[in-house]
Length: 303
Picture 1 (cartoon, helix red, strand yellow):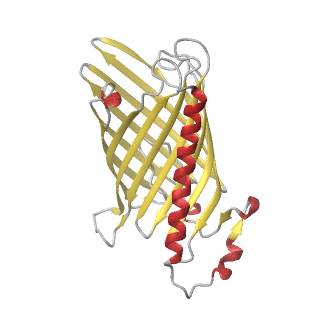
Picture 2: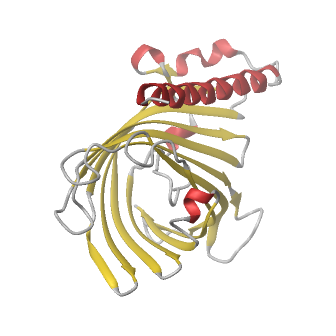
């Protein structure tokens, strides 16, 4: 299968998922309370071609922060520090990532700086990874009449600037599409799809990869589960995958899972700490060739 056909299949899969979300929305709306007049909410539309809705949960910036999957929610003021540790036989990898996100209306800008250390049989490679600059913005929102189904589609861009270290050599360019959906009071589903292109020289220069991720969360408020010092407990599950579209491993999909949770702690002044922990594991054989097991921790400060 050539590169163009693979790209077409990936795009069709993305469109198919979007269509299924919209179909579910219509199904939910048909069961909504009939006394709610949709005309009364017509003035909630705004933005380019009235694509956005003031009622959308997305504008509250309260979707749970993913761990391995790229964040797609609106973040107003946020700083975070993550640590990912994975191992495979004698090989071990540690990645510590510092990130700052700032919102301007519905636009979220981010800066991400990772430091990576890889070791295998006494050989160590370490250094600052690509410094990632990103931006994302929603372009279409649908909210059912009762508000029990709320979905947002948007676009994003990420540019990786190499730090000229043993870890970071090639610039990276990643256009993305995302969807953030809230169903009822508890369930959230976040998905993101991107086409990564590495430029520059070396063996990875010119590599193109289809990247995708899904994050499922179920928010439990303090009144429902009164954990000391916790405002919200969110059990989560992530799926993150990538498929090279050219080079030697073309078409070989790698899929990793993460069983995790996040605790939104009580605020300290204007700052709310959010602590997270997850167990990382391979799902298919290609992922098992790189990762046998792993853990991820995340500390977020919303201010």
